[in-house]
Figure 1: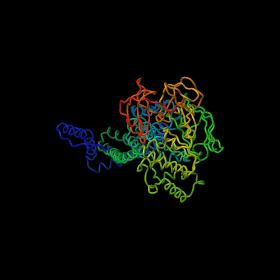
Figure 2: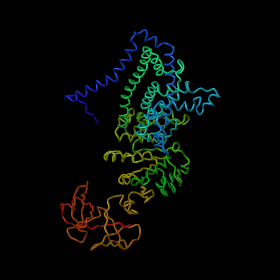
Figure 3: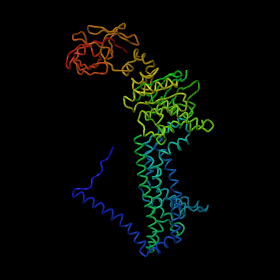
Figure 4: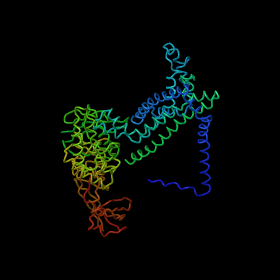
Length: 281
Length: 344
């Protein structure tokens, strides 16, 4: 089915509406973005560069990428497993579990951080045990990772579930009757069919993992050069009135977001094409 | 005997999908499982394929206990209504799949696999389309590819689940002939699930009629048609008209005339009898059931009439184009006399 291309606005009210929408977008999205760049380069290129290559900034970038590099693959594996369970099997309390999967979308990230402090903090449930065995979770990398995992838990699964539901199990059943092992079915049939949705979910998950502030802020402890991720680093600088440093770091985060956005748009374009092919199938 | 199914029962929670089902298939036989939706025919097919386990009963194939084998090891070629082709693989890759996933020791060489694919592409008359993707094929072509993919593993048995259900009438008839031809060439025992009686009668060596999870009748198509064992089978195989009559010694007596009565049991007394549209005679005067012509339509080689009696009952009858029916007009009054009836 071809959707008729929208026409250019001809009447006066249509023109006003369009102008309003464009102005509003400029005001709430473009203006802040321009502002970030302007503030970052306010004192020229040299101070901008020097605030990016200072050790604390570099360590924040490294930590942000490291946390994402651990959390995202784990969530991708979990997402595939969860989507497989939800779309291939029927079991009691399925609806309830599906709602729980969405919980990280709806609860405040601060809570996603605090629960870990309550569990693994010095006065938490497992605090004494962890201290006795000299295991550091809170105010250390493991805490940042689990907080990020919790916040970004549903992204991959939520991308895959509707697609796998739509595709059904016939192809997998056919593969089994043709003699394929469980391994073959997954790698030769299931995975190729979900690869674009999976990539898309991973991308969203990555963007969120890198940008996460609330949950990470609670478990981080803000130790400079050690447990500050990029968003936390920005906050610290900003609170110290180092606006060039804060905005320079913000350009990096915004840059990461823009790269993700471009990749996401490319995928959406590609993915829509694939999906359409599936529908025709 | 190649397939022996004995006393199969399968319940889903408290609903019996199959109840004490037993039948057999000869080597190379083409068997149809015919029944309305909910009759248990797809459940039965899934059990045979190993995708489900029955609660009780046994399935043997060439003397081997099939229930102990997993779906993967049964080597049963399955064809689905939805085609279930691997959408990210070409036609040739689809056909080769079953050979490519064999363990290294049993896997044929690349050249052998390519030769098998070529042979099957030729068999399904799609030699030039090996490099296409399923989404670039028509429904009929896809189903042919699905059959080739199932045949590639040299299956012990072919199971087809409403394979033509998603196709339009013309393609369906064409594929039916073609499927029968392929079956006769390959000689694989084939079990075919359908709710379309015409398809089952046209295609199968024998038909198993299922109703509510139980077998109503098993027989050759003509046998089923000539000697239906129950009202259900009679009605499922074609249009049926009901009238009251008094039956004794194979004769049904009506008000002023009689007709031979076919029955699986010796029945007598007042009964409801049934007759086919083409077992009806029309005349301008009685005796017979008085009725008005409601509609008059050409149905291929014959003329189909709908006739309404004064008490509102509607008969459907069928006549030659050149017959007593050809001069009738809408609203005319005629008298209908069944010339042969069935009693159950």
